Every structure is written in structure tokens, then in C-alpha cells.
Length: 401
Image 1 (tube, rainbow, N blue to C red):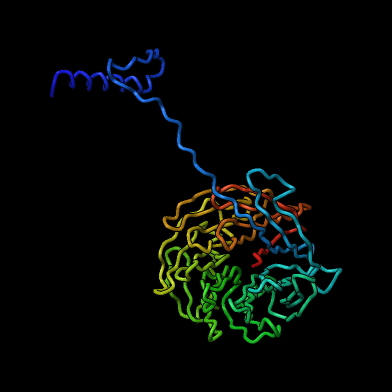
Image 2 (image 1 turned 180 degrees about the vertical axis):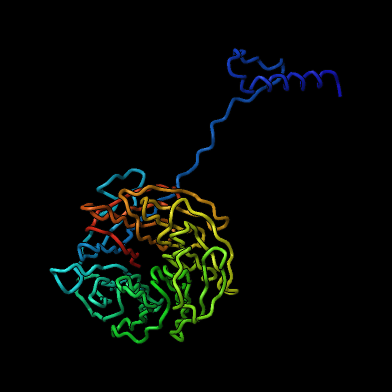
């Protein structure tokens, strides 16, 4: 190597050293000019990152207000870069009065839209002694039918074809805590055709995307229950309590009471190969493999998870934390916590995700005389982008097709 090249390299190294941050308290030496003959390119500005394009569409969702005996129809139009509310954002398009008894609080709890978007089903949870499932026309608000179910029907789901509606009977007001059940209803006729016994205090429940299996978590005996939609019978049980994970015999569905995990929600993955269970008491999310019926993993959450929703693209899991009123967003590839977002009000409850996987819609019950609130979170920017108030005690939420 020539003496000239060695000298140039030495000068470059010396110049580079001047870019290191000086030790605290030491004077900063002035920038040295480059060696003669060496051309230093000017600093380049950082590359511009194009913002995620905002969908030019209007999303519609339904949310229950339990203490108002109402369902709210929410219209949400994402704001484009040059837009500001009220030209965009979220608004209550209309409300539906539900239930039979104007002077009593009947408590609409779970809600689901029919696949064609023309009707919705809502569970009326506070019946004495039994609750009901009611069906309403989205366009007119007219009640299309009703059927009596078990005690305190909670979450509701519908088959992909719309033929069957599944309502889990929470059994909340039974002092004996008898094993509860799943009501299976014909959507057109509004007739209950099966009620298999499941476990103690089942709550959050969902069908897999194929509509072949129904999953629910049982708060009082730490079980994940799988019901075969074809036979309308319990197929398998899985204990989700830490240290006891694994399949259990169907006879154990009604034996004893345990709340180490206290599962409040069971959410199948986008492809149906996994089920995610919210352990409300132990502040964890448990992942179960469906094919092998075995534990995949469990991970801790910042606070007790309550409800879950998986994005249709299979990338994210969204969880509400009821007490602190927060929502957490998890990347499923490696269980990374992407964001923890505080709600507009306290007591976060339900969550649903748009069909394009872009937005999460979260219900917040509020405290005392607070109105119920819907927060809308952009799952690309991981920011809350809108909120809207509905009737008191916002609970169940569903996205209209």
C-alpha cells in the first residue's frame, strides 16, 4: 500500500473519531476539515416514510348498552389526511330499543350480525329466571323473533351460513353454580334445537372460522370446551390452569370448582388451528393447538385480559383489560406486545376487529353515570383515532358486513 493511501486512510479514521460523542464535562473540539483532496458528501435527509393509506370506506358496527336496553349502530369513516371531524370519524347512526319490558332493565349483552348484514341477534341476559335471544332487522329496527334460553345468556355467535346461532348461558345468577350450557338456535325459525351441558360459568365464546367447532372458556373450573357443531355435543375439554394444562375427561366438566386461570374468553385463530384463552385471574393468554389438543405456550399480560379478538389476517391478537380500561395489541408471530392503549373511559369490555384487519373497536362501560363509549384503534399506527358515546354500560360489539 502506498504511503499516500495510508495517509489518506489515517486521516479519514481521525476525522471519524471526531464524530463520537464527547465525555460529559469535556469541551467539544471544533469539526476538522477533511484532508486535502478528499470529497465528503453532504449529509442526506432521512428517507420519507409514506403514511399508511387510510381506507376510503365507512365501517358499520353494533354495540349493546346494557343499562339502557339499547343497541347502537355506529358509522365510522376514517379521516383522510386533509379531513377533520365531523366530516369524518365515528357517530351514532341510530339506536334500537330492545327487550320486552320498558320498565325493567333486561340487559342486552352479546351481539352478532347475520352474515348478510340485514339482521342482528342480541342476548337479553337479565331474564328472571331465564334470558332470551332476540333477532332484529337492521334497516327497520323491527323485532323478527325471540326465543327463551338458559340463565343469563352472554356471548353470541353465528355460523358462516347464518343457519345457526350459538348463545352461551353464563348462569351468573345461579346460587348453586350448576354446570351451564350452550344454546343452539335456528336463525330463521328462532327455535332452540339443542342445549348441550358444558361447564361452570362459561362466558366468552366463539366459533372457528369454518363454523365446525365452538369454543368457550369456563370461569369457575378453568376449562376450555370444544363443541362439535355437527353433532351438537361436547367433543373435548382442556384444562388451562398453569401446571395442569392438558386434556380432561368430559365427566370433569361439572366436577369441582377452580379459578386459577378463570378464563373469560376463547378466541380461535384466523385459520382455526389455534385457540387463544384469556386467563383473567392469572393475567395470561394461553395458546392451545387444536389438532394435537395440547398447550403451545402461555404468556403474561400487563393486566388481567377480559375479551379477545384476532385479526382476520392472522397477525395480531387484541385484548381488553377490564379494570384499568386498556387494550393491548399482540403480534402473534412472537407474542410481542406492540401497544398498550388507555381507553377514553374505565372498564374496557368487548372488542371486535374489522374484516380488513385495519381497525379494532372497543367498548368501555364507564363508571356510575358515565355513558358507554366506543374507542376505535388503528392497528397499523397503533393509535386511538376516534371515540363515540352510546348508552350506559357498553358491552357486546360486532362488525356489520
